[in-house]
Length: 300
Image (cartoon, rainbow, N blue to C red; front, top):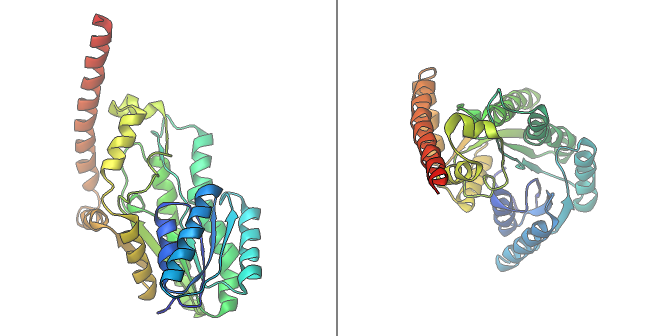
């Protein structure tokens, strides 16, 4: 798919971050949009931004929006059907919606595990299966599933997030091979962003098990997480769309993603030791800070 002009793209998680930037950049190229998110106010803002971008570029596009929880299978299928009803066809599905969760294996609750898997993994599965027949019917299509650098390597307190993103990667790579065998005009790409400047850290769930292991409170953990965000969502969207044009099987987004991929390839087992040593230092500093704070409170 070398051009997005006159195509129809569906995007989950379109109310902010990469989803919003994908919508705006696609609209600039004359792509019609079916957008979804749970945040209807910000979704409407994305619709307005996309329409303005298209108008400025001299393009006329149809942009529609739907409130959607991607963990709701029936809702995703209804949105896919609605997209075709409103636009006549659909060529691209960006399964972009995702959430984060900080918790240890021992400390995580099953409800939290279900929550993140239902959105990050099952939301991708539902989006893929709901839209695939429509993409095949259009004769030209692409499925873009957003995994993460945490789908390439693991680290402590990210067991559930790692599980969801590794699952997206495995699912998408298998899908791509099946589509290659079918030669049906539809392709798939697994996207692995590094630290992207979005609100995922602020909306993440954290459990007390993180503080117990690393000596970091929820606020401190979120601030640490956000410090790793070095790539703008605008840049990320541009990289992703270039990868779709080039029919890439996998795309690494950001210099940190490239560096981590290289580390894992070079040190497939021992990278874990490197991560543990970094975390041990972080834990020592965090627990020292807590001890100092408690001593100050006691003295007061």
